[in-house]
Amino acid sequence: MHIREIPWLEPVEAAERLKPLGGLSFLDSAMRHDQLGRYSYVAADPFGKLVVQDGKASWNDEELDMPPLEALSYYLDLYQLDNQPDLPPFQGGAVGYFSYEFGRLLERLPEPVKQKQGNVPDAIWSFYDVVFAFDHLKQKVWLISSGLPEHAEAERTALSIRRADVIIAELAKVPKTQSTILPRIARDAWQSNFGRDAYKQAVAKVVEYILDGDIFQANIAQRFIAEMPQNYSSWSFYKALRRRNAATFAAYLDHGDIVVASSSPERFLSVRGRDVETRPIKGTVPRSSDPEKDRTLADALLASEKDRAENLMIVDLMRNDLSHVCNPHSVLTPVLCGLESYASVHHLVSVVTGRLGDGKALPDLIKAAFPGGSITGAPKLRAMEIITETEQEARGVYCGSIGFIGFNGNLDTNIAIRTVLFQGGKAVFQAGGGITALSDPSAEYQETLDKAARIFDVFATAGEVRS
Image (cartoon, rainbow, N blue to C red):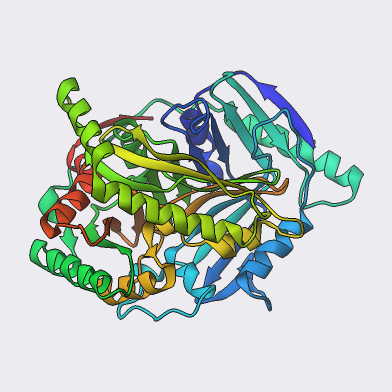
C-alpha cells in the first residue's frame, strides 16, 4: 500500500478537482464533530462496480451467477487488505448505496403497486483503489493507494505508485474559478404522492393497525418530485445543501445518469474491527432562530412521551437485530434518547453497540439489520408490509443506506434520509415520520414538512454557487 500525506485542503475542494475523472464518491462530514463528523473521504475513477438490478448482481456490466450479498462478500474478500491503525477507517474499498428495496432481496415482502422512479438499481457499489482520507480533528489528509486490482506484490506496488501520481496530478489542477447560477425551483413545482388529507388518512389507518395489535409503529413517508431545468447542476445543488443543512453523514455519489445527494444526520451501521454501532433517530422538532424558543423546543422534545416511546421501540428492534450477529451479552445501549441538534431540527438519538461474533462478516451484519428499524417500524417485517400497502410505490434510495465498506473490514453507513435523487431530468426526495398509537395525523403531516423544509429552501433559493 502506498500512502502519502499531502497539504491540507477542504474535502469539497478535492471532490471538485477529482470530479472530471468520473465516478466521484464524496462521503462528507459537512457538520464537524469530534467523533461523528471527524472524517471525510473523496474517491473517483473506480476500478470496479457492483450493481444490483431487479435482484441480479453484475460486476463491471457482466452478470454474475450468485446472489447480491454473496457477490459483495466475494469481491470484498478478493481484495482484502490489512487495516492501517494510524489512518482514518476507510483505506480503500466500496462506496455506494443499498436502496430500500434491497431489503426485498433479504426477506419475503410484497411488491409495491408502483415501481421505483426511473427503475433505480437496488444497489450500486463502486470499488476504489485510491482514496483521499481527511481527518478534520488533526487537519490532515492522506492519499491511500492500494495497487488493486493487481495481486502480485511487485505489480501492486508499481501500480499503487503510478495511480497515486495520476490522481495527485489531477488534484493539482486548480479549476478556474467560475460561478453557477442555480435556477429557482419554486415550492409549487413539487408534486407529492400524498396531499394533506390523504397523508392524514394514511396516518389514521396505521394507528388502527397499531390499536388492533398488528404493529407498534411504522414509518410513513410522502414523496416529492419535480422537473429540473435543462443542465441543472446537481453538484452545485449539493454544495448549497451542505452549507445550508450541514450533516455528519452527508454524501454525494455520481453514477452518471443517477446522482445521489444526501445530508443525512443518522448513522445506520458502523464497524471498527469487530465493534458495531448503530444510532437510531426517533423524535424530531424544528429549530428556532430565537435561542430561548429553541431551548424550549428542545426541552419539549426531551419530555415528549410519544417521541420517547417511539425511540425506545426502535432501540429494542435494533438490539434484537444486532443480537443475531453479535456475541452474547455484548449488545448494549450506552445512550438512550439523547438530544442532537442540527441546522434545522432537533432529534432524539439513541446509541446501540455490540461486538460482531466469531465467524460473522459484514454481509451477515447487513443481512441481519437492513433496512434500519428507525425508518421501518416494529415489528420490522409487518411494518414494511404496511408501508408498502400505504405508500404504494417503491422508495428507491430513500431509507436505504449510503456509505463505505472497506477492504480492511471497517464499515460506516448512513440512513438515507434528507436525500435527493437526480435522474432523467427530475429530482425526487421523501420525508416521513414514525407513527405510533399516540400520533396526531395533523402533527405527523407537519413533521414531514419540517423535515423537508431545508431541501425545499435550497431548491427555491436561486443564487450563485462558486466553484
